Image (cartoon, rainbow, N blue to C red; front, side):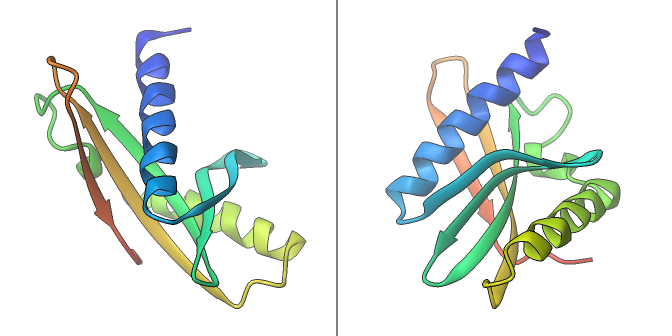
Length: 118
């Protein structure tokens, strides 16, 4: 597996743990529909969260959350619509970005952006 894929998987694992520590219930990781994917689908307080996780080891190319562009958000929306079609019981939905920065000394910074939209 390519190095950047390994970093992404590591970030998603750290993100899942971080979310659980804050009271989220994880429902799915890497949920796919056609060509779209949702990194994490979780719930908290009767709200369904579709979470895009971005991970970096440094800010050479900017902060992780800066790479979540309009195309990525649209793909998140497309996949979430398919999920909601399959699981229509959810009334409240939210789209979030969780930025994970893993520093050389293995400390980790998290930046959670809630309720994004276009």
